[in-house]
Length: 343
Ligand SMILES: Cc1ncc(COP(=O)(O)O)c(C=O)c1O
Image (tube, rainbow, N blue to C red; front, side):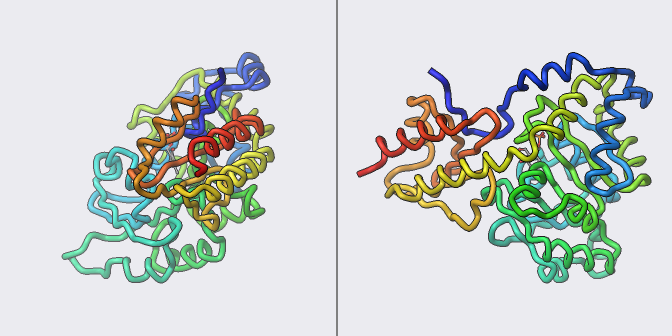
């Protein structure tokens, strides 16, 4: 019996076409800059976002941490959302690797506004840390895959330029944002200084992320990739998977979004659950669980039916649609949910 794995979009396995691309990849030593497939992926990604350069790195966490390191100095402060991935799920990396402190701001749907940032920027005074960077996230994982509105990103970028702050976008799922919102990738590129992009989430590659930015920024990022142990050798075999993902798996994200909507609607029709449909804009569904049931118990009950989901807390459970989930899997999940939880 197939396991319907809705834990995360990181669980996808490389398709046959992707494996063929991996097999045929031309490779070289990328630490010497001699891997033609990596170079192609980097140029292609920088071009997509209208940026000068890109760097291939092993993970989304490394992409974010390299960006934080390259934009800051020890003792600086970085503004982000209190639900941001870089604040919650990167092992305290910003303090550990860059010696900076994070200044988390609250806000519905993973959003922070230019107005909030204006108040959070530290005045020049030797008592305070110096604010040097703002990190945004689009789509927003903990907020349920929600979109960051373009107008607010533009306002934030204008504000940050005025205050000489850099803006980094955690775009682990920026392709989901692009497909759901219709915003051209170059528009994202022009209102931030750097973006991290994951190939191994909804795009279906086994490994890999990129960070994009100006040539000068990427030169610094390159040095930190080495320092963090992220220099890889004949890694064109992975870059080939990334190129395949960008060429074949972006437009199809709309299928994942459509399936997530079906799942969210079905959950919302069941008494024990409620889903914020306004926040459910892409491939992530976060259901609130009403007492006496709790999310851990529900995850266990679903697991017994070969459906996997992640409890975010006792009252929230996350389902993610992706490349390896088709309509029949969603039908099955909805049938099981109805059987278990319909009164
Ligand atoms: C928004 C966001 N940023 C960054 C990452 C980190 O990616 P990785 O698991 O490749 O380190 C994730 C992973 O789920 C994520 O959801």
